[in-house]
Length: 411
Ligand SMILES: NC(=O)C1=CN([C@@H]2O[C@H](COP(=O)(O)OP(=O)(O)OC[C@H]3O[C@@H](n4cnc5c(N)ncnc54)[C@H](O)[C@@H]3O)[C@@H](O)[C@H]2O)C=CC1
Ligand SMILES: O=C([O-])CC(=O)C(=O)O
Image (cartoon, rainbow, N blue to C red):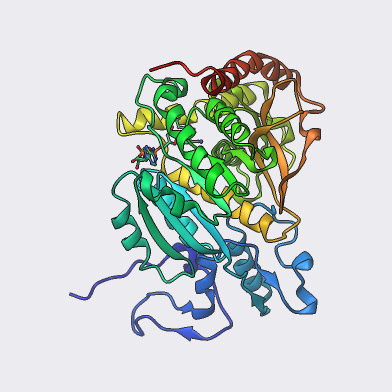
């Protein structure tokens, strides 16, 4: 019996003007455009090279600049207008290191980073099992060269020359635990990994995923200070998943096009310290008080929702990998000179009286170029109350991280 192939949803409804390849002449299998291939892995903002379609006048004008799926829109826009564009794909020239690459987040995250056209070297580090992940990934025909590094003795080589270091190393939660319950194990892991970053690639952007982010980022800052290489503009707590979730939940609730929605999420990354600013949602949308309450609580508890659904098998890994890959790609675009890159992230901050705070920032070649202070202006009463209420918990988590390095408790 002949096998039936299911059409890929992303190509089913599209019509292309370029050369075509018939998969199976007599079947209903879709015809795909060979030129469309790149859109499925090319996450970076493609630069138009002809004068009519410069990057700033490109068909994706008006689409959120930090959209991880922007190139899919390019494909659609191209299709709609039946015009053809000449693009110069971004040059692959950046080195990214993933520490904890064999883990639940590390593996899919490494795959997504492997798909970036901006990455020339992808270095995978873990305490075990990273060789196989590397062998597997290295068969993908995307530009980056993948290398594996196992154990502390290979960490320095993994990090040398890295432009971006992503750290998802550490233990995840089980049902009934808070993120802070991970502190005792993950604090030491982050400390030792960041020490190595300080020694081997002090100029790199450092993305901390390991929980509790509200404490592990201050830990990383103190380690970098002790090593004399702290640049607060280049140390980031990855809170992108909170934004990804907020965008998803709001779009569903209000029947908006997912790709258009952008909700800033500020504060920190645990429970009530996660504060979605629904009043700042783009496109502008109104919510009833009940919707605000329901959405805010869902966004704050979304991590726990996944932990409970996984019932002991860990926490969010796939959505986290997606979110972290978006943050990596944004960082690479910023390093590459894109002047239109905005993300929410947990950083050293003057926005409130707290020394660290997540907010929207503009990213540039040197890291954080500007903090978007207007997000905290004109808050609703509900948001203002949420902001005041999160401060004591967030401060305690920050202080705990700082104290871990400044006054280490002997084991
Ligand atoms: N920032 C965020 O939004 C999120 C953070 N997380 C956090 O990310 C962390 C990782 O989660 P999963 O990948 O699910 O855990 P996992 O247990 O599946 O993977 C962790 C990996 O880290 C490795 N590892 C442990 N110690 C290491 C060390 N010293 N050096 C290098 N690698 C080391 C392990 O061998 C393992 O491969 C957890 O702390 C989790 O709470 C999870 C989801 C969202
Ligand atoms: O909930 C957890 O433990 C993992 C996490 O940070 C998230 O999913 O937001």
